[in-house]
Image 1 (cartoon, helix red, strand yellow):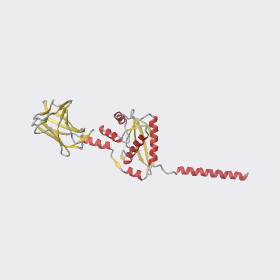
Image 2 (cartoon, rainbow, N blue to C red):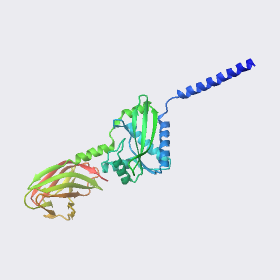
Image 3 (tube, rainbow, N blue to C red):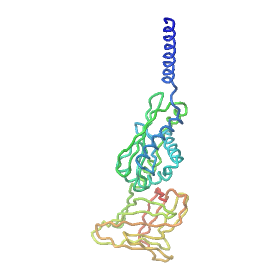
Image 4 (cartoon, rainbow, N blue to C red):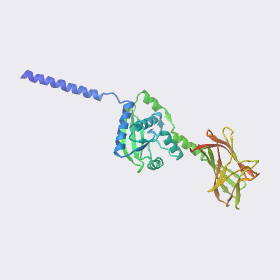
Length: 327
């Protein structure tokens, strides 16, 4: 009986030793890889989107805690787009389309997304959810926190997170800081919106911006009558001094139409006095648009904008104007 008890004790020791070894093995199991943890993250997001009945989603590039975007943050967004699409459960907005919309509407979204921007993006793209997030460097690993935002309320309705082992691939991606494309475009637009002003013959003429859509360039001006009397302002397509632009390659394009406020004037034919005229009341301003058709799609700037005001009147010139593409 005594030998039997010793045998049972011996067996129990072996069992407990094995269990302890197994727990130790689990506890010391190597950190999760990038690919496996991305699958984990996608699984959490899929579950949360399904539970909240969200079917159309936009993915924003992930940023670090300082608000900077690295190649790792871009890689996370690209992988989420691909993997969510492959589930065949959701409509995922393609990244180029998303960036185009962000640029056109001057929305700067990365990492944290505010409520108003989330709602606005939802209206523009028709998405019902936005996934954004942050990346935190923990030394030997990286913590990825994702947030799912409802475009209806602008509020976070779910979160997901994973910890990824920082191997050589992750280190390399995190080391490469990039500037988000929508930030670059926004800065470019802001530069283009820095008004250039010329004052001549009692008029102040401000160049606001030049935009291209379907190879038509529109230069937006604000013309102010600075005199005490009402004056007629002319945009002329004359024989000697045509209103025209030159692109960065030196190509010339003659004006095709003028718009004063809500009055659109199509310039037809070539004559001595072709053009358009607007009476501007003393002290008032008129929004003016100059149209140039069939401009090279490769044009990125206007080297010279030459405006003839009245036949043999005065010329106004603007140089090195960025062209904002809106198509």
